Length: 272
Ligand SMILES: NC(=O)c1ccc[n+]([C@@H]2O[C@H](COP(=O)([O-])OP(=O)(O)OC[C@H]3O[C@@H](n4cnc5c(N)ncnc54)[C@H](O)[C@@H]3O)[C@@H](O)[C@H]2O)c1
Image 1 (tube, rainbow, N blue to C red):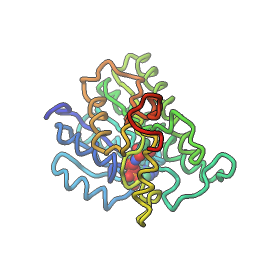
Image 2 (image 1 turned 90 degrees about the vertical axis):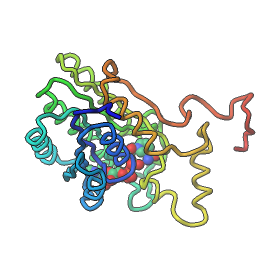
Image 3 (image 1 turned 90 degrees about the horizontal axis):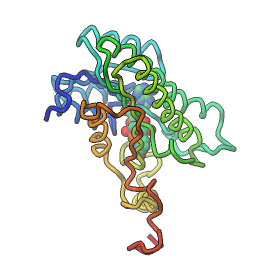
Image 4 (image 1 turned 135 degrees about the vertical axis):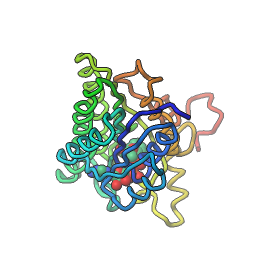
């Protein structure tokens, strides 16, 4: 497979979950991938497993100096940066399920989620454009969420940050087109994808299976998605096959945004 032959890619938050799957499918398709994260041990392990076509670099997406250092190093080492996937993100529930509703969330937790999910994507787009100017072309893929398209009462900051990522993607797409740059920018909107991000929410006890079923009860396909299913769409957007796609948003959600699975005439009873 060679859909990304000769391309140099940077993936943020690539030490596990969706980012790891994207890094894997990109190297399998001929790209050289910079696996970046703040979890150095796991990031190095992932890059090591991918072999000669990958390298780990620490990049905290919240820190502009990290973006400057990493993009300068990539241009010095490889001559170009062709694909940036802004994947790193947090729910705010990393240390246990907390209060994130609009009435009770703390300003501190609101800022912390936006700092990673939104500031991180802003910086990622900014430094991707600057680096891609060297060739005048490239693909920026922003991982938003279904939560960026609908309200989520129990995760207000997460939903807000992902909605802002969706909008900023379109601004970046228009800006690049206006400046005559062949730099495309698109967003991906996954719903429930089974990754380590879900562990604090699902827990490990006997209730885990029931919680998993409850989370996908309203999903027409009645299951979690997989990281590889998201990576397949990132691969399309990163490749030249998507040369006329910019400012677009692609949902990967088992049909949840298409409407209700419990519509009249549905095959399954309302109890599911
Ligand atoms: N899993 C889902 O159901 C789902 C659904 C919709 C959207 N998403 C989005 O997909 C992306 C990946 O999610 P995941 O489920 O693989 O998450 P995950 O928690 O399994 O992995 C996230 C990775 O990001 C890294 N990270 C966190 N903060 C960082 C920072 N400041 N700088 C750099 N790296 C950082 C973590 O160390 C981790 O390796 C996120 O943006 C998430 O919001 C996930």
